[in-house]
Image 1: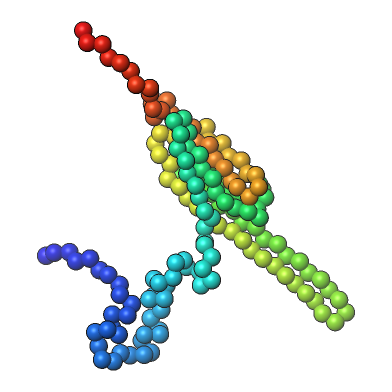
Image 2: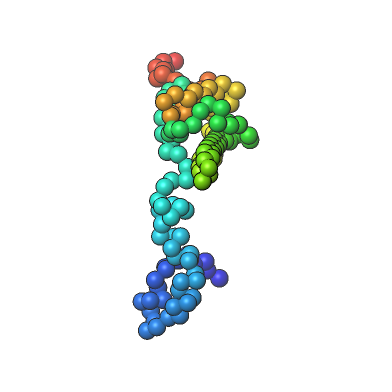
Length: 154
């Protein structure tokens, strides 16, 4: 028995048949989900952008999360995984004789990164400034790149 890679082709029925079931076409919305760049219809990203830079001694991570405060973040390290989540809710209410206006908003995300074994988990530092959550992840001594050494022949 051989394995064959499955490819979803949303409009394959249109090209291979003279007619198709219109009700089935619109009830099966998986083709819409597969064609969108993200799971939200409006095209917004569901998780913040992330930059990772490696130096000789550290990894530097920057996560764009504007509009949050330090107290909105929860950062944990569990089983070699750096888990970052943030949640912010606001509500506002205005009452008048003839009307009541209520506004509320919710914003949140969750992001997890698998840490390399070369990172000192106990030495991770985080800071938040101007909408950027920054991490400094120090490397273990064994992971640091050593300068070239000349070997003498005996």
